[in-house]
Each structure stands twice: as C-alpha cells, then as structure tokens.
Length: 410
Ligand SMILES: Cc1ncc(COP(=O)(O)O)c(C=O)c1O
Figure (tube, helix red, strand yellow):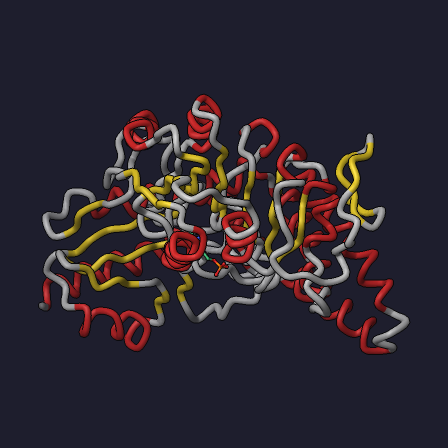
C-alpha cells in the first residue's frame, strides 16, 4: 500500500484516509484516472466481480443442469438486498434497472381516462418518456410539480406537490435522488401526501441504494424501483422493484412468460401467490436472462455492510461538502444542489455560466482523465460530480484545480 500523505486543508486524519485507501484498492477502477461518475455507473469491487465470474463459470459447465446453482445464489441475493433496504424478499422482483421497474408500475396498473399521474419536473429523461407514452396509450394526464433549484427545505418540495395534487391524481412518480441536481426528495412525506389524497406513490430510487440508508417499509411508499449498478457497485443491469403487498394484485404482467397462470394469482396467508411462488418473483419472468449478475448483489451488499451504511453516506457527503465549499463563493459557479443536510448526499451539481461546452467537456477526460457528466444547458454548462467510497480529497483537489484553470484561461 502506498503511504498516505495528508494535505492540511483536508477535513480528515491519516488513519481515516488509510482506511479509505484500503477500500479503494479493492475496486477495479483504473488508479491513473479520476472517476467521479458513480451517478451513472459504479465500479465493482473485486469480490463482486469474482462472484459474478464464478456464477458464470458454474453455469457454463452445464448450462442446463447447473442453473440451480445460480437460482440458489439469486435466492440468497434477494434475502440479502431485502435486509439491506428493509423489505421482505417476497415483495421484491429482480429487474434489469429502474427504467424497467417504473415501466412495470406505470404500464402495469389499470387506468381510467382522466386519471392523473403527478411527477416532479426533475425526473430522468427515460422516465419522462415512459410517462409520455402512458399519456398517449392510456389517456392519463401527467402533471408536474416544480421542484426548486436548489430547494432549501424538504417542506418546499412537499408544498410543490401539494399545489398540484387533485382528486384525479392516482399516482405520484418521483425520484428519491434527482438525476441532475442530486437533491434528496422526502419521499416518506410525499407518501403521506399521496395517501391523504387516496393516491399511491412510485419512487424512482436509481441513486439511493448504496448512497443513503433505506427503510422501505418505514418509508410508506407503495412502489420502489432501485438500481444496484450505481452506488451499490453491483454488476451492470441489476435492479429491483419493491411493491407493498396490498398493491401486488393490481400490477399486471408487462411481459407474459412462465410467471403467468391463466387462473390468476391466489391470496394465501403468506401473501399473493402465482404458480405457488410469491407474485413479485413471477412478475420478473421475462424468458431466459443472465443471472450471475443478480447473484453477485449479495457480495455487493456484504461489501457495503462491512463498511457500514452510515459511514458510506458520511464519506460521500464529506467529499461533496469539501468540493462544494471550494467553489461556493466563486462568482462563475452556481450551486444547483441543496445544502440542507437532509437533502444532499453524494452528488453535487454546479453550473458554470461562462464555460464553453465544446471546449470543456472533451478537455476534462482527454487532458485530465477526469470522468463526470457535463450538460449543455441554456444558461451555462452544468457538471454533476459523484463522490463515492473510492474517491479521495486529492481527486476533488485535482478537479477544482482544473476548473479554476479553465475559468482563468477562457
Ligand atoms: C433518477 C434516475 N432514474 C432512472 C435512471 C435510469 O437508470 P437505468 O438506465 O439503470 O434504468 C437514472 C440513470 O442515471 C437516473 O438518474
């Protein structure tokens, strides 16, 4: 292990940094690069990669007979993620990603003409497409609550939704952590609001598992889609849909396969069943699929549990705060992420009004080997910076130096 050199301006200790360096060394990231884009995809720790490879190897020995090995791993992974997010394993379907999870809700429910879906104006583009499609296909009306940028208090967000909810609203759709600004939305308060109005809530939790601790039962949400391939650092193409038991019978199969039964599901004391299996497990049958990635979710959760959920969030927030503090007074940088401690996690977005997208975006990686998404917006260039457990104060310093140099040059 390379000895740690601490810069006096970092809010940390040599002991802390050496702990995080040990964690970082278990990841497969190229150490010569600065990867600040967990918001798109996380990198795998070695034990997760190895678990996936072992699963693939076991299967290829006899793709027919050895499927059982992967099915056992899947069962274990479902229990493990269930404990991690506090949701019963039987209420969780494994799906490829959040896009699939939200489509399973929006297109799996039954709509009457005139029903309304209330979403925020900060939803991810693919989810906006899903909602637009639902409008055209089912005749539902999609309305929008305007989430302030930056929001200063969780109540501001609840107020924005309260303003737009009507008697016709049947479903709220909302990100738990918004894609562009990283604002943490108080979904438990929105769940209360939805229920007061007889509506339900489907949460797009693309960024939450592995960034912030989750307790889905306590949150009161009805549907929750989560990605495992971002902050949880599980294989790409792994996610889940949690559905509260009382709503499962309302979810129709989006893709009809072996999880279907022409006699329909049955209500048992142990929950809704179809083909003698939990309903949500049967909903995920979409024909043959890759399974080793889902199996490795267990090792991804184990890796994080060994560090601790709170400690992971604190590290991400600490690095984010360090980045924010260095730019917050710069007249050329406008903070788009809230500073309220309950509304900010490990994503920080700044808008640089004077930057030229065509020069800045390619230069970041080509000249400095820094990876972050950069958005060309009407009033400037926005940059989303993700700070996760494999990132360091040194990398934040490097980014800040590059930004200052760019500002001085152009
Ligand atoms: C808020 C949000 N929702 C959904 C997604 C889509 O994720 P996926 O492509 O894994 O479904 C993203 C991806 O960045 C996101 O930021």
